[in-house]
Length: 552
Image (cartoon, rainbow, N blue to C red; front, side, top):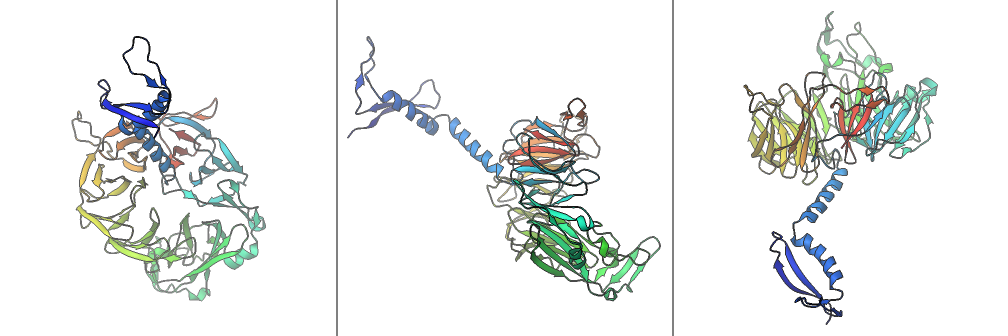
């Protein structure tokens, strides 16, 4: 039998823990040893075989650098596919590119959308998609000045990822809609007839490539305001027991075909819940103002994200999934909230009694109950199923739950206002109202480390945060990056902590000179973080009203 033989193995006396192997090719002719040498003859193919095998053996038994590099690469690539994940946060971020242009033109906020692997922003030229690695404009959808695209959210709010966008523009008979995907428009502009607005309600951007319409139904006489009393100072008391239902319709943005229709029934509500203006841009034509404008019993609005439609108004409140499933029908209008959880599912919370929440599966089915106000992690690495924390400040408890409500652990609160910053590996990173950041064992809740950034040389024990709070959190699977925001209008701070130990990997305190534009080339000048951060395909970007820049 012929082949390669592993002759012997020994430790390299000068190589630390490295091993040295002699390899012999059994069926190759031997080369003569150099004249005067006492070394044995080396088989002809052994040099090539040894070179190839040594690379494999060095990986398996050597310093482990190659293995570590492969694992790091695998982790970085995995983080690109996780919402909010950043490929590498091991060193201080710096500006890698800058794109100058209005973001959210006019009076609107700097709303964005992560559309596939691009960042989409509304600008003066229309809807612009930016390559997150280079800042290059991948495509532009020309739009009118009155256009509104959605679902888009502020980068500091929630996950802006969405599979599609819908853009509405024009007024009256010129109203039209266009659907947009990761590669640009997915449909030609479609006219929105005035007759549909009268029949179904004025249009609103919706999730999953839909146009939403809503209107109150029933005769005006169905509204009974006799139980409400309002003063000249616009303060109202009492109950409104009778009102009109709300019908919500979703139609395909490209074709106009109805996807689904749901009816949200009116429920008795405290008069104070009918004094606010709900979404003036949607449903205002249906609003009936009575009692000198103090009550608006027909007003309604909505907050629309990629996976949830949060309807609210006088006597109506519901959370509707993109497929038309209604959640939270048991929750009281005006005193409850349904929020989306990471990795699927939802939590419905009431704020008028004992702290607790109802958990729903991704399809809307009720799966469990938890005690405390729910907190989802702002950043995850995806190595473990995402947990949910229940903050019970009156009871001084912090509880952890699985997505189905199964209890994991229960610990005493260190201080109030706990927030769930990140879940990385086997560590849960939380922050408190006192400004400290803590790493807890994911399995038990036991405290592993505490960081507050205090200066040991300072005369007083003032923490890093002071009056600041953590505005955003990101992770690369090993490091947790925190964006801290103070009460002033100066730059925001950045601190990167090792998730397992809490050690400071690097930091950039806030409070310096704000970013500005160079008038010679209209480029962003790197002078601190002043906008919101967003992760796109593993890249970290900063979004401001005047532009976007890459940080790497």
